[in-house]
Length: 192
Image (cartoon, rainbow, N blue to C red; front, top):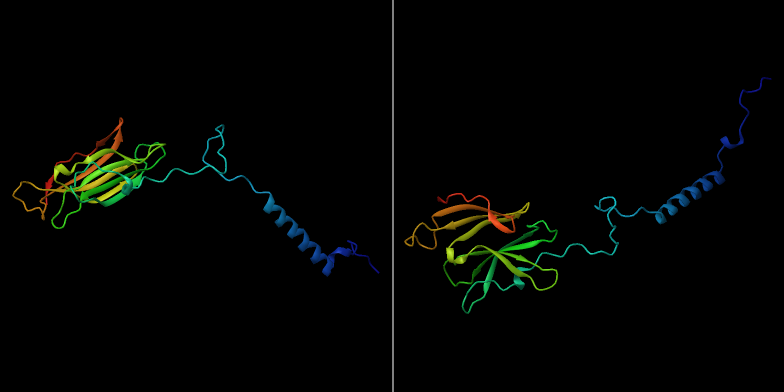
C-alpha cells in the first residue's frame, strides 16, 4: 500500500459546527464595524479647526416677503413677481434677488430688481437696487447663476408706445465687483 504524499486532514471535511463558527465570526466582524465608523468627511483644509458635528449649515437665503421694498405703491402692496438666490458676494451666505412691482388691476406695472441680504444679526434688508421702477422697464428671463444676476429688460422707445407692448429688449448681467453690483454687459438695447 502506498501512502499519499499529503496526510488526510481532518478539517477538509465540513460539518455543521464549521458553518456555525464561520457565521458567528462574520456576524462579529459586521457588528463590530457598525461601532467603528470613520469621522464624517468635511471640506476643511488640513491644519484648520475641525467643526463640531452639531454645527449648523449656512443660513437660508432671505425671504423677499419679509422685506420692505423702496417702492411707493400707494394703498396697494408690492408683489414679488420672481425671486432667486445664490451667494453673490462670495461670503458663503446666500443673498436673494427679487423682481417686484406694484399690484395693478390692469396694465403692466414697471418692475424693480432688488438684492436682499440677511445680516448676521437682524432682519433681512434691501442692499441694492439693480433696476428702478422709475426706469419703466419690465423683467423677463430672470436668473441667478454662478454669482451673476441675469435678466432680459423690456422697455419702450418712446412715450407713444403702448405700455402693453414693449418694443425694446436689453440683456443685462450684474456681478459683485469692488464692493458694488456692477453691470458687466451694458450692451445697447435692441428693437424687438
